[in-house]
Image 1: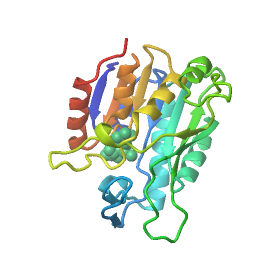
Image 2: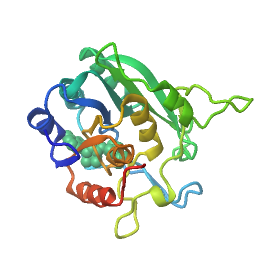
Image 3: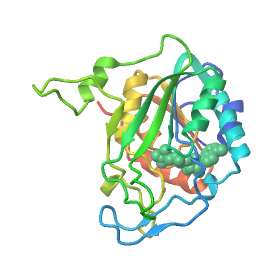
Length: 261
Ligand SMILES: C[S@@+](CC[C@H](N)C(=O)[O-])C[C@H]1O[C@@H](n2cnc3c(N)ncnc32)[C@H](O)[C@@H]1O
């Protein structure tokens, strides 16, 4: 099986035909949240410039179709994971329910639901709800001997005790939305990918649940954040993405990324 490999395709096809059963140590999946369909704009927002609600053609499905799709790719990921492998799935309140139910239907055991608290979240545009400032990452495992690199995670935890000692990492992670140099832009200087995840998020996941040389797979690679973090951390990686524009961006991003010593 090939690794350090990017596939331009529907992830279901690649998971069925190119990835061996019991071969992948860790899956990070940031699937469509199925929340697109309406434009919503906030021009001149003070925290991060103009804001556009995620509204992408890959993110619109009917409810039954979305449920079936979710079940299908989670099942295929289960098959390629090694016996003690782990899956982390990013979601919001829009699809948290579907993710949990489908993980359970596929006999995964949920270990944590990590709350990503966005320290620079966008204000509520409609002013009819509390400001949305969180997403969730559901961590689930396949067997009983899952990897959890407790000490390494403690070492990279930015939080300290009052005495300045290292601290266990909690399941609430305060990380800003990608901004500044990390945010990929297209030739018109616009945001390249509407849901680019922070590298810090992937760094924590990969360090916690894999070891050097392990295989990390992302079935919805997007702008390639998982692959970049895996390469830096000396893991082998496999990425799948169905939109060509993002494939090109990932390739460029990978060229400029070196494994950390
Ligand atoms: C939420 S984004 C992932 C963003 C990514 N985590 C990042 O940091 O850039 C989901 C991605 O999945 C892709 N996608 C949607 N359906 C897919 C499918 N069936 N197979 C492969 N990729 C798919 C979309 O084109 C989109 O880039």
